[in-house]
Length: 98
Image (cartoon, rainbow, N blue to C red; front, side):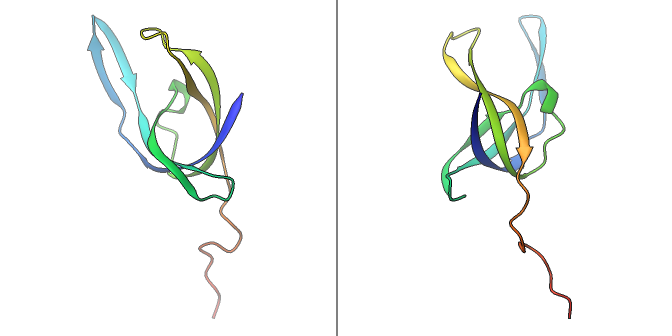
């Protein structure tokens, strides 16, 4: 298993359809890959696995990935297998009592 720190900034609506007579569904999200200092490194789109569709909210996560071969292209790619929320930094967004 491999991990990466990422920030999900937008979860896109789930899309469905039929191709070659077979139904399909997918959902993805707009993400920023963060470096070890929590600074932006890369921006991209991440496909959500079936068990996470409709359950993910914007926020910071440690993403777990497995390497798998794509059935059509046979390319070996990282596939998201899980998300663990990263708590906000202490004091971030906290309001002070007057």
